[in-house]
Image (tube, rainbow, N blue to C red; front, side, top):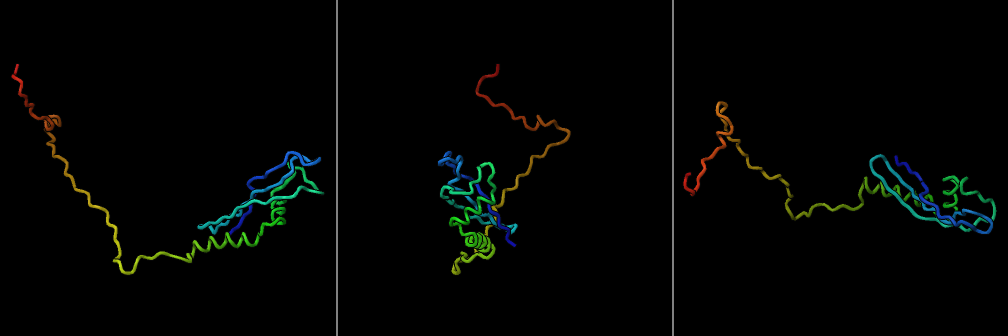
Length: 143
């Protein structure tokens, strides 16, 4: 089952419009959908004419009220929700796939073998420093 949610991400406001203050002129919206595994999204903006009556002060606005304005001003809620649902359906059942070419043999990826390195053997009775010591060879005369 696909769950859809609408959010208002940003409002653009005119500080003054006639005698009104903080008048919303644009709302940026997003519709998100998910089925728990796959997701889809659509986003856009809706612009509004200045209000002529029933002005709601900016601080009293609700997200649902602004979404209502978006739907009343050209945002097709049904079409957007269908688009988001189709995005998810296309992830579940891709309408186009790219299978391997039929005339090529299948490619098997095998990790490379790493050479096995045997650690040097150390006699427990011999100090480790004695094993690592090499004779010093020098062309300089002994003092």
